[in-house]
Length: 341
Image (cartoon, rainbow, N blue to C red; front, side):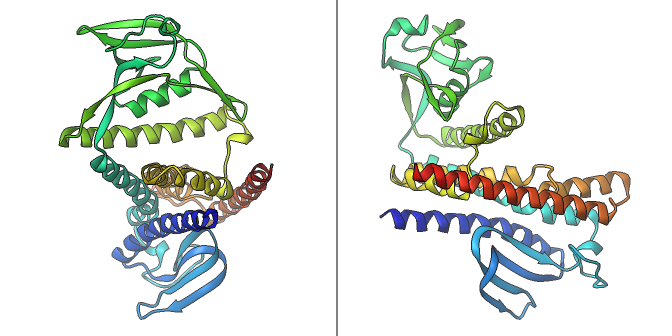
């Protein structure tokens, strides 16, 4: 069964990569860019075939990436339909399309999960699971509006806000008897994992029946909460809030996906939506080795009407790519060790 879950995880990775590269591919086709190869995966070729449209379609060994090799993307070309001959705005759209499609797919998954859910959790307290006195002022039927000035509209946003802020006493704004009331220094139980302390929501909330309105509301807020979670993780890594232990590579994410798959279809597909959103947002970061780096160079060109010298751009991309591959290798080794021990 574990092997089946691993194969399922690898299949999901492959689909996410396929979707991403199809975004690039589709808009390259729309803008009539000459394409040399469309590849899913990296490394040695497992399968490759050139079709009538002149594109070499390939499946490669390692499911950790993929690419659309466009004429003139990395080399000089005299082809009038090469990537480098296209207007800057078209190149910007082509490069951004992969990440944008991943984000759209994530939102679509959340929407279908919302549609199939029988009810939604609210932010109104139904009952406590522990000692009521420990909450220092929170009461049943309080509708929680914000946690530490972070507004919450769904139970997912509420749970995440408590998780990130609840390692210390927090101020919570509630709606009680139709009036706003600030409950100060609420203490939540905590859990430590990999050296980081998380707050835990230790009360139940009321549910509400599904309507068209709250399906849209839940899709919007859940997607927004996922974006915030990913962004907080990136900022946390930059500022040192999160350490090396909190970083996971393909091996670690596969292991996590296997664990989540055992919890049922809803948890699995929600995790897939998070991966898709993560892939989209991460690729938009202004790092030379990523799509976001190319978007940055293209944006500079569009603003100043002059391209960044190709030699400088290529050098920065090569250096960043080497560092990124090194990071993936190191993190993957760490993930393997963690799985073993």
